[in-house]
Image 1 (cartoon, rainbow, N blue to C red):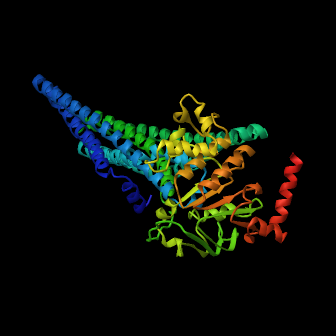
Image 2 (cartoon, rainbow, N blue to C red):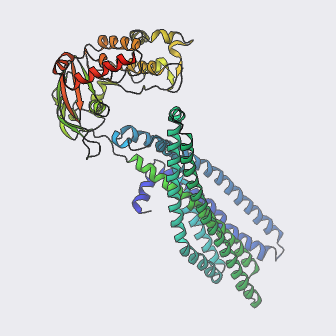
Length: 579
């Protein structure tokens, strides 16, 4: 860990003062006890008891009890402050992760599994919250400082014996450095395995129905079993290293005590030693052993927490969306694509030299084969991805010059998958919209979409609690709620991505009728496979092989007898065959 990383770790949260305070209190508690106890005990044994001075023995015993009491008070207060720092740090870390994800470039988020983000923002966040407060300040620094304090006391008691003991522990520590490095590598690998496990479990739960349908249970179980075996292997490695550490320090303790007994016993025989000194030194060797074992335990935990911190740091420092725009936007009247090109990886071209111009009010249909780039095109409008070449103009202004928040305030988007929150139906529809929207407006939109009667059937009506997983509403009905939410935003530009793909023909007819009425004064981009739903569009863009190969109204494109004509005829043949 270099100095810059240490500084980053220390400044990551706002609890610097509290953290230092905790460390100072822990050290103070150990200093009060460690610096006074040996000398008082030595005086009691060598002087007071020998001289049979009962008053001094009682007085010093009371002082020792007072010291233990003060230590207990400090210990209780420190424990409270330490946990306060944990929870504060955890709160701040989770906030930083959430804010970072909110502001992240979508292309970067696409590379991260949902389960990975879940693991980082939950268990790893809590582990990292303890890194500096306890693992570093409370354990590493304080334990080290306490060991140093005990070493000084040993030197004051008997410098010859102290040098032997300190020498043994220093030499052993040098030899154990490779083991520390090994545990750090083990914990890093273990952390990667845990993240992989969380990501896979999350995906298996999300795709539970698909897994059952495709009979992938055994494949999933085999994958999980493999991950668990790797995890078990790394845990056993870690336990083995820790066991070796403990065994070595037990040997060191025994060696140190043996040295004290041999050298100290020889001094007693020569009449130059004191029995109480030897007794205290044996106790202090045991203290050193206890502190170093505790230090080792904290080093192993610190390795794990440090790896958690690195994962969090990587997430927090994820590339942010670039927003250099300074201009405001009152409305969207015109949209123009000029030689726009898009590539997600800088190598494979998704869209190439896209050119078209639309004005309000207008409905634009985007059609083409699967994977042609239809969704990629409409995703450029709210700047989910950055274009590689060309420019997109809003009201004649390069939209990169417009503030990102301003741009998105004027765009509503209904995605292929319905976005449903664990809230009431009413709050789902209102989510993200103005708080001034009235219930009457919501009911009116739902009536036009043909979902009002279904909602009325529930005992709690619009106050019925739903989620993405509940079966109270069908997939298509949940999509209608997303549609209602977008309509109520009253944006100038609306994107509808396959909103009717999971609706039956009756629902589809109602939606398209409502769409025509409610979007009549807006710019709307509609992606659809069912071409009968977009026949009345003002402009149809046919995308194939990264380009717009045809553009025009339904009648114009039918007359051309090109790409659209063939797709339209093939679609009608399939529909007739199904009938």
